[in-house]
Length: 145
Image 1: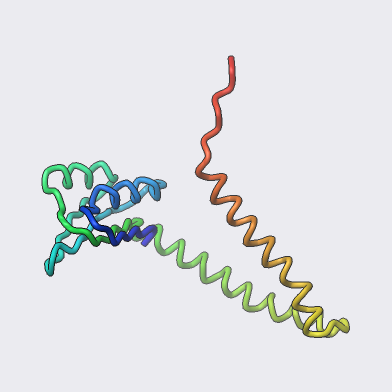
Image 2: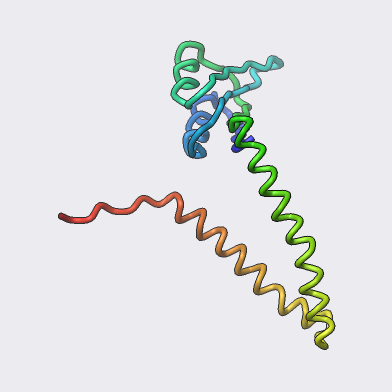
């Protein structure tokens, strides 16, 4: 999976789910779909390839329902790379974190001082992540000729 959008609304949600998928779209998705609940029935539409194929499917067969979910999937080859990268980062953190904390404790820091030393690092990582996410969605202004 790459991105999932879900909406609990008071009116039909299919168009807003498709808009949410467009905001998540990056590149190379294998397929996308939308499922909604209409009363007690679950309705779904899906299409392979780009989101325009799903939009065409929804135009031909509209989806009723006030509750819905819409996932996008990467191709199988790319999913393996993503899982491998996540596992390697997790392994590095599980080894480096205790080593670094142990080194700080061995240098004479108490547990409270250790917490104060590590919190700014975690806050900086979080702020950097938020800045990168927000910066990715900005469009650069065209330069004057």
